[in-house]
Structures are given as C-alpha cells and as structure tokens.
Length: 115
Image (cartoon, rainbow, N blue to C red; front, side, top):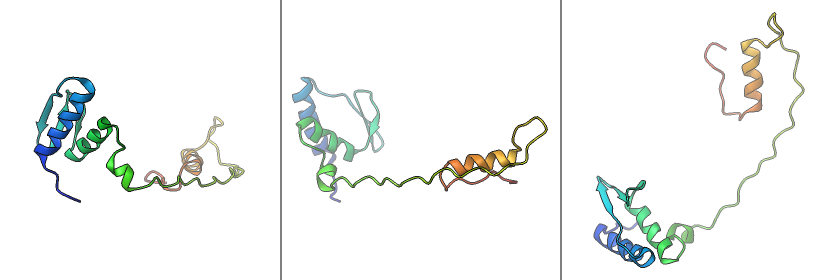
C-alpha cells in the first residue's frame, strides 16, 4: 500500500467537492481522523475513495477487487423436537429453552454458564 500525502489528498478532495457542490468542504482533523462538514469521522484512505466517488469514478478498492459471489449455504431442515422436561406450569425448563434457542441459531453460539 502506497503512503498517502495528506495535503495532496485533501486538495484533490476539496477540488472534487467544490466542483460537485459549489463550495469548499469544512474539514476538521482530530488525530488521524477527518470530519467533513461535521459528519462522520473518516480516515485519509476513505477520503481518497470519497474523492473518486465525487469525481464520478468507482472507488479504487472496488476496481482492484472484483465482487466475490455471496455464499448461500442451504440451512438444514428443522429437526423434530424431542419431548423436553417441562416445569410445573407447562413451560420449558431453562436448560431446555436454551437448547431449543441454540438449535435455531448459528452453530457458533454457546450455552450460558452452568448449562
């Protein structure tokens, strides 16, 4: 990754912003972050992408890397629930409730402590 010249990047952005909006942007620097017109703070590399968007070109990152196809994994069918032990009022016990909840979610979920 090439090092970015702060002054050049900000000058290019100001020129592109002025061409599109007819006024200079208000750029506030806070450390290595820049707030443009009081908006969300962004890094210098993001300002390069914003300059490309203002100039009408696609961002450099989008040009360099083609869009990867989205992975669509088929979800397994819901298994028939086993009869769970229930509390006296007809509801599930906490352990059974969490097991059912975690079966429906991703496999990356963990049971709470003590179960």
